[in-house]
Image (cartoon, rainbow, N blue to C red; front, side):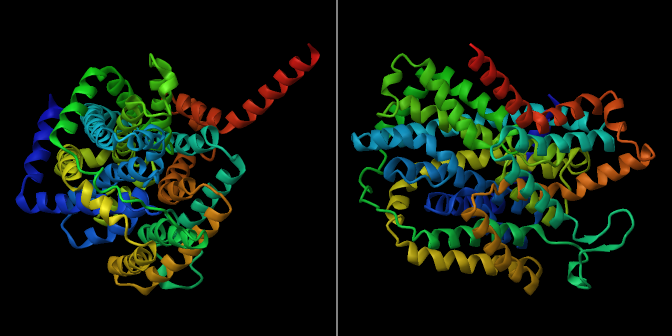
Length: 506
């Protein structure tokens, strides 16, 4: 009941006409970057984050929520109409959405996608509302050892559940190295500043993010001579009332699949580094296995559009939960949102729920309201967005580059930030060409300082003994899970060798 009352507090804070206006603007901007091939949601949010620096915190927050949801919805349009995913999490939707479009069912496919995206996001928002406060109250009891153990789970998830263990560890180490630049948290001594006063406060996260995701993506697309053959699908993009009512009937008929996919997506989104992409593929697999006609998947099955969209929008909500409650982003996009919260002078974590309830619950309320705004604008503006996609990429590219540099300079009016965008844009390009994962670097950069602080405080408490993490009743089990995640690739390798020997002996 307390969660509901706090949600109403948040609703009252964001229903100001000016804030609603900023939210609508955010949704429109998010839709625009979400549908652009080669840009996508994470890159778009990174580029547009500096736009919010001039707003007061709650207005900035609801605008950022609008950008977030707009980018989530935008990618599905290109996936269905042109087989060009605007976001990585829209790939699974393409498997059946594009065949439906070829069969003349593009309107139905998009209507189903938008309807179930709304349902999935709302289920995720409800779960968020009722789990956030208990999580925060439990986390308030965490000391430094418990926080360090939880943070290690975040990095262990990348190592244990991701691929390319060596590359992942290198990127985590690089993120930690960048996080150490500036004043030492304990001794107050400068580290890796090379005598530059501008580096005393460390690297600002936003310019690095804009460089890695914004400029880096543009350079990568240019290197690949990015070209998309866009056919005229503007007629197919016009959604009628019949398409919308048919899609609602379909979602209601298959409500269990929407519910299961949304809950799966929310739970997957909570895991650091997981996010919406794996959730959408897992939901697609469940839909195929439980279908009476699995042979239709890949050929235009509406369930193949419905399940991944419900999952990825719920995962988008789920990834925000650990970011707000524990200060651990569940996805790269959530990490960028976290950078915005830092930029406005707040520190994500359980204390935020106690010290700034209006700020936190305004964000939670905006998950509901911006989702409603996103689906309405999406249904109305789809033909215009489809038409916009015919704009040559050669025109879009310089606009994105200008936004990257202007946005970075606007944060602190510092040329250092502009140079950071350029440097990390080149680094981001190299990372992509070498096929290294970007998410571990970003998360390590964000969590580097709190991880170091928790570790050093814990070692001070225990006179340098690492056993403090395993001897305490709460941190002990969490630390064991973290260690298991780090050792999972090794355990998997040993198990495969044992199985191979058994098979060879038989």
